[in-house]
Length: 163
Image (cartoon, rainbow, N blue to C red):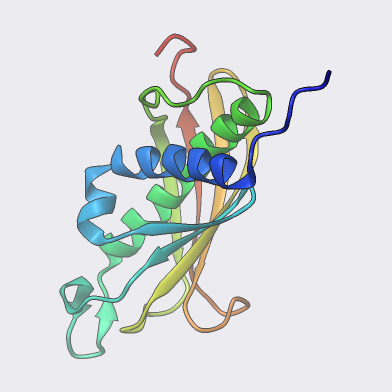
């Protein structure tokens, strides 16, 4: 007799718990208020606007360091999420604390325009991910997905398999 598939809500709760554990593993992301909307395996990072994020009150514009942290956090979470997703879909137990995060080798940011005083969104795409090295591209926008205010490319040293 075939076993019954898991209820959809149980699967969603497990996936959301794994994602929340990843985000909680980066305290600065919590400090900035970064959260992630998940649709299946696709993540969209959300940086809710807060007056404290403004770096130049004359424009006003989101601080460049906040933008950089938002993009780098999005890249790191996407990189680990891709790994976790594969493990979850193969039936592995990912409820244990997440492994250590990849280490940034370099991170190049293109500031395309000022980040306006409103919510920002970002998506990352893993270009290459091996046992030791990964490359990720990130794009950030506010009101219009086709009108980016920043983009970045990062290279990361992946944690060891037992880490």
